[in-house]
Length: 207
Image 1: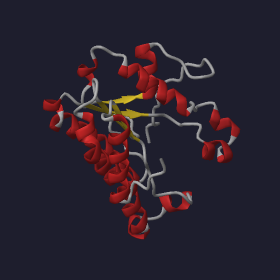
Image 2 (image 1 turned 180 degrees about the horizontal axis):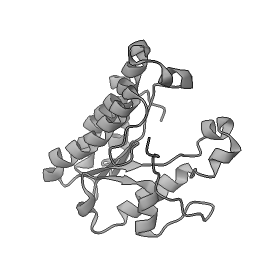
Image 3 (image 1 turned 90 degrees about the vertical axis):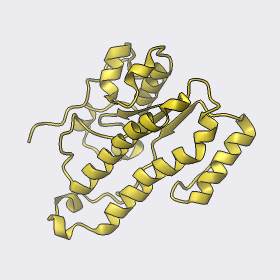
Image 4 (image 1 turned 60 degrees about the vertical axis):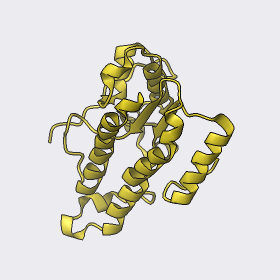
């Protein structure tokens, strides 16, 4: 079902359709994002006072807010789910600066949302956490990144395998509210990428 996650009515319609067809929801993965569809690296290098406000607004409306409103819409379905889990997809490396104020703030907010949801929804038996992928081989990355950079990437399905591993963890409550690198989850649970590789946890170089 196509859904514009910046449209609250569309999000509610999505929740209603899931409810009508399935009656419950076991897993919500929040991975919607916006803010650099026409990515221009020069924007990230501008002085703070020259960076466009529209990009800040879009990162929050298409990212943080969309994650929140989608979660809010489906919580009644998650309450009926089997071991229900919310996974937010964000970015980060142990609190290191992500290189741009707007981007850093938006991604930190998504991670914090996972933590806040874990506290608010714990009485309902709903777990929430955040996965931090590394450099991911999306279609856009494959189209634009230099070949030398691709050696450090992993597939999008690697993150999917991380989610499956979490769902199969009988002791998952111990991770409730946390943020976890996809590469570290691969090491913890022993799964590989689709090509058999074992991506290392993503690390931001010290500046």
